[in-house]
Each structure stands twice: as structure tokens, then as C-alpha cells.
Image (cartoon, rainbow, N blue to C red):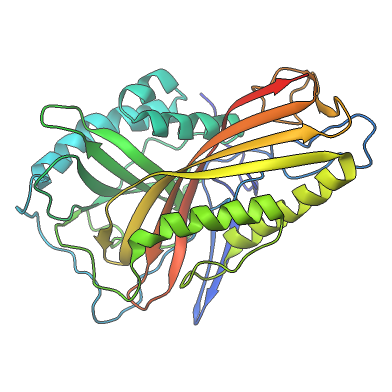
Length: 368
């Protein structure tokens, strides 16, 4: 069973150090269960061989804290509105989540695939291939959110308050879905963060929200498409466009900008051209939480790298220059695909942040 290397800051999808400064709020969060950084790029006859392993947009997690304010959601008792009941949520946690959590802890991708959507299977595959490690199979408290729903597909959010291997608090944000009556419940979106407050009250046992999303100043359903466009422009040009309003700059966006700029400088120095395609695959409903509204999304990223002058894209025998699944040899063109789960939070005060980021390259092919 793999275990993470503690106190390592990563720049791959799902890992990184985040410093968030907003008004009087100052937090630091380190995404749990990530190992050492996943290598550098190598080229034959190049002027430079070092660049960040990942070239995707925001690479980390944003901590959350709920400011005391009017209009904030309130924890309620088990609700009865709609098809997603408290009993359903508890049953899904005892079956689907129990199997998923065990599989994640044990790196068992076969078991994990049986209780998650194909997209989440790719997200987790990329996460592990990126060099990140598993989470502990620990649940201390759970917060549920399920806006009233009367037609399929059904969704609900579960915040699993857990702990990392070094005993620090670890919050897992999980969205479950059921496509039709009688069909199995599956994990549809997944992410985590540590070192900052949970969205639901800490240590209060099981709480359940069956309310509609908060009426806030920003339509959070627009966030996934806005960040998909932002990431596309950033990666393709190497120049950071303004963050989508009302999202605030954090360590996530700072790291993404630095990675994109470095990658473009590296490509220029080594005779490489890169083309990116960011595609918004799906989004969850907007969920109310005691900290504000939350939405999750799946974003697919394809990167194609071409050597202008020949086979200058080299994957060494150690497989530490590009994604580890790429066989060792020299290539003229390289294509890498990544699946990412991203969640976004809007506070009742109007501030908005990316909350989680998880995934990585799950496929890589090359041509001579």
C-alpha cells in the first residue's frame, strides 16, 4: 500500500501550496496525499531541460472558511423534499463511498472503477500517474447537500471530514449521481483539501441540507465554462488573462501562470510548439453549504507538442521527463490527455475561489 511523502509541495494537478489573502482571511492549504514532483523534460541538443511537469491550469486547492453573515445557509435536520432523502444519502455512503474510499486507500483502480463514473476513473488514474498518493480511509463527520430533485439524474454532495496520514484535517468533497431508478449510485466528482476549515461545521456528526442554492450576486453555474476558457487562453498563449469575475487571485492561479510562462519559455528554447484544447465535459448542480454555494465540473485537456526540427522530444529510460506511461524513446510529436475535477465556491459575501483541483495525465502517445 502506497503512502504519501509528507511536506512535499507539488505543482501537478491536485497538489500545491496555496496562500489565500482576502480581507482579514489568511489561510494556507496543502492538498493531501501527494508525493515528489514528477520530473523534468528532456530534449536532445537543447539549451534547457527543466520545466514544470504539468502544463494545465490551476494546480491546487483553495481553503474555505464561512464568514458570519446574513444570508448564510443553515444546517437543517434530515430533509424529506425530493427523491434524494437522508436515508438514501446514508445508504450510498455505506455502499458506494465505502468501496470507493477503500479502493482509493489501496490504489485499487479496478474496484474504484466499479463505483465511479468513467470520468472519475480517468481523474484518479491521472492523479496516481502524476505521482500523488492515496488518502486514509477515515471518516470523522459527514455533511450532505441535496437541493430538492424530482427527476433523474440525481445528485448530492457529501463533505467527508477526515484526516491525512500525518493526522492533519483532510476534507473530501464528493458528488454522487444516480442516472435512473434502480441504477447504482456512482462517484461523479471528487476533490480534497487540508489545512483549512470545512464547508460544514467541524465535528458535528452528520448534517443534512435539503435547501435550494443561496441567492447570491454571482451565478456560480457560469464558473466552470469561464475557467475552461481562462485555462485555454493561459496555456495556449503563455500569458495570463484576467481571472473570471468575481474570482480572486490565489496560489492556484499564481502557480498556473508560472507554469504556463515557464513552459512557453522552455518550448521556445528547445524548438517545440504546443497546442492545447480545454473542453468542459460536465457540471454538477449548484449545492448550498454553510459556507456558500459550491459547484463541481469535469474539464478535459489535450496537449499536443511538436518538435519543429526533428525528434527532440525525449522520454528517457527512467520515464521521468514526460508522463510515466509514455514509452522511452525520441518523438517528433507527443499528445497527452488529462481529465480534471474542479470545484468552485462562492461565499455569501460575494468572494469566489476555486475550491479543489484533482486529476492528471491518464494517456500519452507519441509519433516518430
